[in-house]
Length: 411
Image 1 (cartoon, one colour):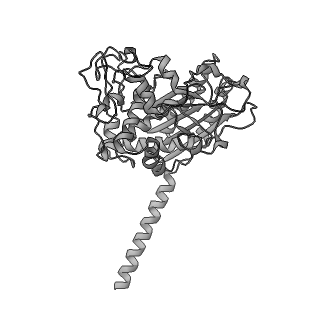
Image 2: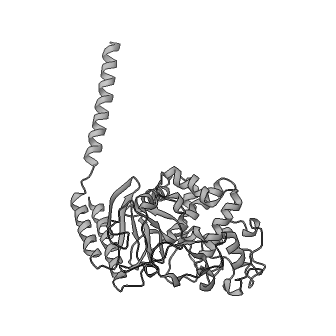
Image 3: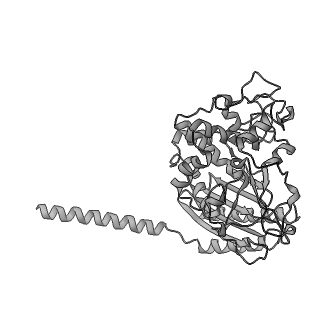
């Protein structure tokens, strides 16, 4: 009798497992047709010929759905751009500051409501409102009242002299500092009365916390505060708490972190390369990654939005995506912690959450749609100012990804 019951129990379990396996197999979808359509649409968009190299991917909270790449990474137009090609991604880098900030808060190292001067070796105040402290959350929401004066922020770009012919680079785009300095020195020079680049124009006429004014320097300052609060170098902090857990093995903050043979050069156009450069305020835009690696990060953000992320607690992710609206934003746009809730950059109506980026020779976008539950990434290695077809090409590419996203939902 016992043997009979045991046989029946094992048979039931095996039958149940087979049913689940069969059910899983039936749920596995064949995307061949819509993938082929997307590839054709992307190829058609790429024929506008303004972009030298690009990669795209589509992910969901389970991982990669589609990826592809077009064009080249070298001036000879011989080396193909692939999903594993790396490049700097400009302001998408700020999303790592957001995750790191909330991780540091979880660790008890800081609080979003703390004044920034609690962690700095010198004081930073808006001279127009000296009694109103700038809080960490003001940096995260771009309401710190810190202003990116062009003549100061441009000093963050540092040229890397290379063996390439100077005709291949647009060298005069960059303000060359006397020498490369540390981030904290840059901040002191820019935002304290003793600094050599300081002026009252480095701050707006709005009280800290009142109005939103996008600030790269403010974002870099936030990364510096994370470093002081945790006692760990910001680059190392992101590696320990973001890159390693997500197995983003092709990503980092400098050439020593990546396989340089996979890195794309950046272009003005097909005849001219952008001079190689780095950023003193690296945390605001200097992250180097591939489309495939960035897809791992976007998948994690999507998981976090749904309450089951791995990098942060459910409460921290809720805070990351908590919508804030500011009275000076006439469009009604809302923002989270270094997170946007619209794609105004590409100027397409698209219900998305994420960030975009632009730097010399770089245009990037990383967003997910909470309704279709898919995310889209576009990395471009070409400057937007040299060809009138650049933005029409980008719009065509993004519209192709939106159409694909819609078709996925129907499957």
